[in-house]
Amino acid sequence: MPERSSPHPTVILTAEKVERRFGGFTAVDVDHLDIHRGEITALIGPNGAGKTTLFNLLTGFDRPDAGQWTFDGHPLAGVAPHKVARLGMVRTFQLTKVLSRLTVLENMRIAAPGQLGERLWTAPFSALWKRGEKENTSRARALLARFLLDDKRDELAGSLSGGQRKLLEMARALMVEPRMVMLDEPMAGVNPALKQSLLGHIVSLRDDGVSVLFVEHDMDMVHEISDRVVVMAQGRVIAEGTAREVTNDERVVGAYLGERFGSDLGETASALSGEGGGR
Image 1 (cartoon, rainbow, N blue to C red):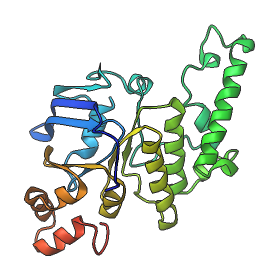
Image 2: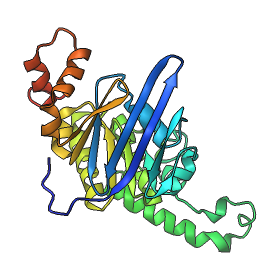
Image 3: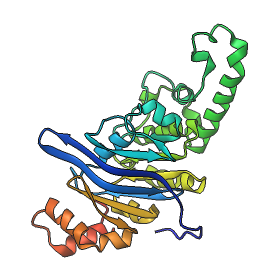
């Protein structure tokens, strides 16, 4: 875990008694969860632990059967995804959601909030929105340069590689100047050459004061960049702490052993600690 000299951060996101059931199956049953401001928090757990479902609930893409959560003091239960984003909490997806038939630059500009040119009553009056559009384009270009995509700005987003699409999603999320970014398996499908670049960008988000919550199976990545780790199994939070603390927690080892039936304890502990491979 990276060393931090700042005092213990305040909580930016808190959830209480959040439940999501599908028929007789309980996918999420989170009694309490706090995400700290200004930190990189990893959300890990075996396949089917409920991580992505929890992401969907917190960001408004799914509705819970019970529970409440707040972001920066704003209650979010029942709030639509676009309104969640306007409040400063944005997300990316495990399967990238770029607009394939728009250019990379157009993908960026469409994410900018408060565009007067998109409103019916102001659209005919270009003097009202031209300056804002120019500012959005400048901001988009700056972010694309930061994510090494500026030379792709006029290409269709559908032509990008999987890793480049991940970078575009992350850059596009920053167009709304969020206070928190949620990344669902940011390394999935990314070639090794781009992984270090993505890691660096995630760390830079924290350095800019943005809180980060990410779902990940790559334990090397979790150990390298996370300040704090939350572990889910069977829909519940079973452990929290530093990467070292949770990988030495018997409940965590047991959860992974349950998924990898027949593995011995030594192999599981080694995988969780990032030794001998990340997955």
